[in-house]
Length: 251
Image (cartoon, rainbow, N blue to C red):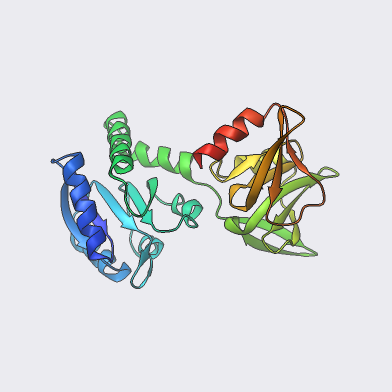
């Protein structure tokens, strides 16, 4: 397996190489680039690797800009010190998103995931990327209406969605309410990353990054408190309580 490392910190590059060596000695690092510009030039001048290990924050900008300059069809493992780019990362050929410092065990599981997908789609490699895009691509922005105009809100800025009088609204981190361009919460839920958003009940979908605390109420239900004001208590229904606990433990 041939791998390109896109990372602007030399110690991090050395750590990744050591991890690969310990995971599988057949993994060959064929290049290491440290900027968007350098990476684009490398990809233009060399055959595409089997896999790219890509840091998101590079010396001259976000690595997402690489995709704006050259077509990349191989799988990508994104790496970053922050989790705020999670949703955006899966708009590209991502098979995983790892936080720094790199955990060798987690990287090993990601390599196993890559090999499983590669073997499954070995007779039709293009289907692998179609599969990845179908499974992982989620919206990075939501279209909302403000009066007669439309605008977009970044997914990471949305604290929660709710429905009222059969209309779907969203509330952002500044506690501003907008009318969402969806008829039902079910339609909205289909376009959201399930690792970030959870359908608490028939009325609310909450963003994990804005949950400040939660507690058990009425035996089997769960009360969720967000870091932004909400006009009423958000209660996870009895039917969803077990799923909520599993979800919150995995994020």
